[in-house]
Figure 1 (cartoon, rainbow, N blue to C red):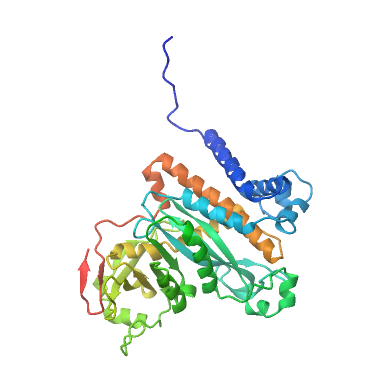
Figure 2 (cartoon, rainbow, N blue to C red):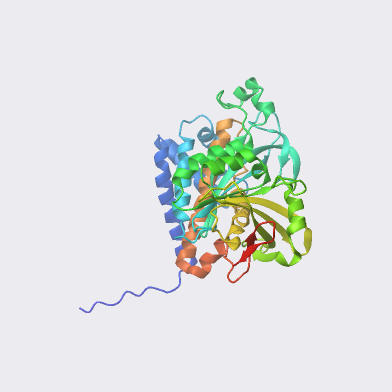
Length: 426
């Protein structure tokens, strides 16, 4: 009997993709289920993950339970409150899952072809006085000062995509100074006040061992970048960075040259601003004009890394500028340096995906540990979407995969040099 050649259709139908997606979700649930010590908890967690990924309008306890075929939310509430399981273990599992799933074979989002670790915070609208961490505080997500909780988030971004990999709940001083109030919200007595940069440092310390070998860059906004202690922490750990800073940040000791905004105004000639894309987004291509200079450091020894000042503006708003400080290997090209602050928006995209598609902000828990449990489960659900998209892009080819990454500019002149105007064009 002559054996016929297997006839495989060239195109993949939506039904076949949905079935593959479902199989991948079941595999993830089986891997994550080992964290839960009891079969009942494992089943509850599986129902929760499926519900967080389902087209449910609001992913609170009632609707997640109804989606799972239960008539009451008690099971879901038990999962987030009284049950015993290792939420930090699930956090670490999510991180390793993301790092593995978003590996891009050296085509990372930052210089060195590894990736960018991005730190940012987001607000969760919440009223009352009993939910852990609720206070009137500034929230960029809400656009002002409102009663809310603030979560400090870390995201991993590569050429294949981005996803959240860690989280910390910020507790204002009015909370940590009131221990009875903390105990009522189940905040451990060992948890004291910590600024957002200190929480970011704690996350980075536990994230680093799981990141791939190579040059990992760090990007952060002004809340973190303006603090010298945070930048010193990164330098102590030999982590190159580009962080947002205030306009009055001191750069050089000379009088009249101290503030970064004044330095840029004096030294940046109009023809030296270069237009480069900072990466795709849902709004636009995020093309900005950049000015990059290396800061002279006479005390730097052999093999020392370089420092840069980076300024960014819109072509139609040349006076509205953002400022950055950078630190990294001296041979880093200017067009690659701007990829790092360009990657900072990707934590916003990761947060947006987790909130809109996976119910990151839909929780109704009040306790300290309940917040961590819901946020971690939602991060795992969002990580599944990011990794699935990355895998589908790989299968569709490099053109599809490029929509997830930050394109590198080719043939563009970016100058790096000191305030004296000396530079080396690329």
